[in-house]
Amino acid sequence: MRVSALSSSLPTIPPSPSETRKPQILCNNLTTTHGISADWAKKSLIGALSGALSFGILFSSPCSIAFQSPTVQSPPPPPPSSSSLSTKHDSSSELCREDERLVKAETGPEVVTNEGIVEEAWEIVNDSFLDTGRHRWSPQTWKRKKEDILTTSIPTRSKAHNIIKRMLASLGDPYTRFLSPEEFTKMARYDMSGIGLNLREVLEDDGGVKLKVLGLLLDGPAHSAGVRQGDEVLAVNEVDVRGKSAFEVSSLLQGPNETFVTIKVKHGNCGPIQSIAVQRQLVARTPVFYRLEQSENGNASVGYMRLKEFNALARKDLATAMKRLQDMGASYFVLDLRDNLGGLVQAGIEIAKLFLKEGETVIYTVGKDLQYQNTIVADAAPLVTAPVIVLVNNKTASASEIVASSLHDNCRAVLVGERTFGKGLIQSVFELHDGSGVVVTVGKYVTPNHKDINGNGIEPDYRNFPAWSDVRQHLSQCSKLQQG
Image (cartoon, rainbow, N blue to C red; front, side, top):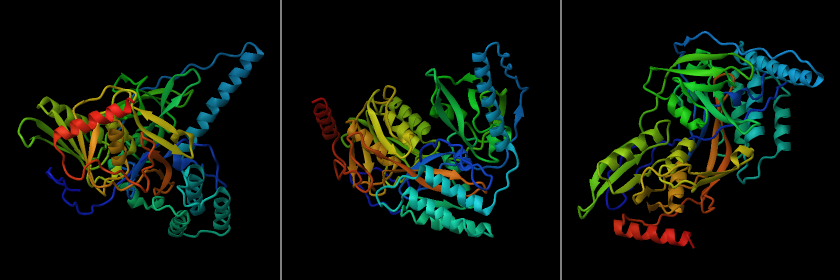
């Protein structure tokens, strides 16, 4: 994508390659008839995405060099002294045995059949796919499709991939699709951690929150260094991560390419604690371009920021740009999202929070899985409070529409340009056992003003660049209307 110069009117921007991304998936312990964990692909999930024509949120890289410290074994549970204690001990022991089986399943050699690959893809759709209104999917018809497909042998991997393509095409969803191993590896710029893992916040019974490894790319840096699926992350470079969000910890894991980060993990619920040095393989390039300009009358400085996509560096680099422009004297801001087809949904959410007051709604999400039925709100003070113009066009899509609608509906920005693309769907990318993958629509989002973006887009406030006095007046009136 090109960086377009700011002007008083909006030029026509030529079509550009599409890009996308989206949210995290819970894993269910399902076993296939071919002896493969049916949720293995889910456990290999590196992230989630959104976008007009969809890409992914994954990481793939060669093996990393890792140095491991001596492990510290957790003390064994005391022997039971009563029937109640015995019951508790047995339960704990069973939990530990479950962990041991999980570790063995994830670290042992894997042999997957062609039928197993097809069934993995089928299970992912069965558990996570959200029908977005075409009414071509139902649990019954999907079950029959599996039975029909697996009644005959699948002699080659190529035929297995073709079957998956046809199976996904039958859903009638243009965003749910198959990725070849080659296509899968091109998703590297969406790895939030830079070491090939994805984190999830897990709520404990006592109300506490643990950070666990939800997605782990086979043969990626973290996997090669010894991090396991289900590990609890305790610290990053000796910084305790208790109380931090998954996004914050993913940011801590980031750093210059080929440098090392040390993470302390606990293997399973009863396993050892281990500090592991992992070599970063962050391949994302900065999607942010910024400069300071003068307004037409020369009385004010304007901070112009162009965001090309929502990749792993988007939030961090945009925050840096905002701070620098503010230090340089910017009293107004322009966020250019023209021709931005999307990227990581979480990055879009976190970028919107940079502009919003604590407690303001960023977006509503809905989906088949309960984890997508959320109201997402800002949790801190805004980084800047100056008036903002967001530039949009008909190639502004998905995560870009999350940011644009969030700032617009909360009276933080006016939208200038053309009606946006209108993609309000969420995709997740899952790796299959053979290094291929599937992109599946798993949810949708609704604006703070409860408008459905998908298929509709967002209408701008102005077609041409307005005077800053008009922007101030528009935002002031918007705020008054909100307050009643």
